[in-house]
Length: 101
Image (cartoon, rainbow, N blue to C red; front, side, top):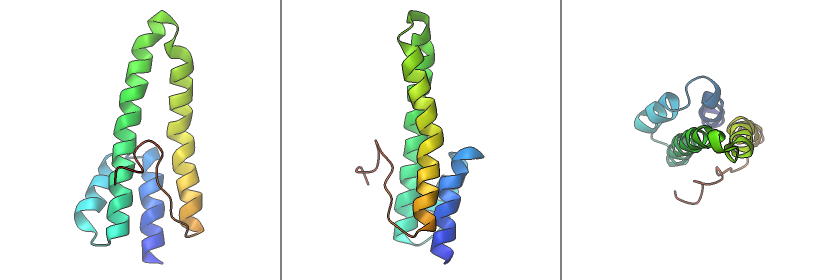
């Protein structure tokens, strides 16, 4: 049950400390599955932050508006899907960075 709670914490941290909590859990926890999920969550937040930043710059040329909307929605929806999967105790890999680790 502890592992399920840690998985939920990693996913939910996207809403209050997207980089800090996964990094701390990666350093502190010994469970390999939670470590893998923590590094995926951290990389996902960093990649999405970079994509949102690039999209915000491209808003000047109007091609960034749809990208900004899609990436912002992904940043909200993907952790919610992860929380649901963690509650059901199913494995979950983040899109974009899930296959890296």
